[in-house]
Image (cartoon, rainbow, N blue to C red; front, side, top):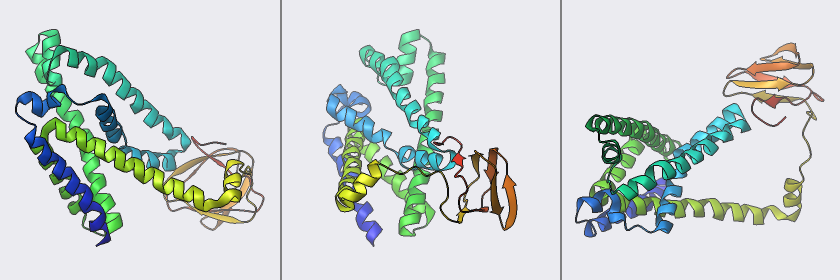
Length: 275
């Protein structure tokens, strides 16, 4: 019941925006590019809302857990990709008056074959992007609401399809802008509440952390995924109950391994993380 109360308003607002888009849709240009009348502020909010997708929330977080802090270069990379797309594709396409990327490719190079190839590329990239989003919807609803996996996939697919069919690009843009504002609030409100609840002492400790270089007591660590670590000095551990001494260098703990570090043992650095 709780998950329904959380999801239903978002889906309802999404559909209402789609219905609202019908009233403003008269031409092909209305459907595909919202007649180019979306303000820069709304457009930027929509792009930001798209940026804060399942890839950002779950994908990057999972990569950081798996590969260490170095995985944060992934969002830097696709941020740079956004900028390149805006400069090299979006701006020239807007100036050309084309409604779609295949239209733009054909108009720019006068090649119907390139138009067909571009259409295929757009469909492939769109599929690669959309499938993980739907999968995430299924996984999240399964995790928080104990619903069958397919429910989240169908719900997300239906909401997106109906919204786009009814309102076109105008609806898509306003939905993404709405989701950006919603996600921003969901970030800021808990963050501010936690900071206020933490108290002055805890905030000071967080800003001035004590360097954690050695285990203060015997510490068991259970690994849920394969993790490669850098061992800085010979370290005696028990892996799955078997004592062994790890030499300096790389050490890989496999999924479901339990490694017990003794008191005073040096804390290893996860590959890609801070030493």
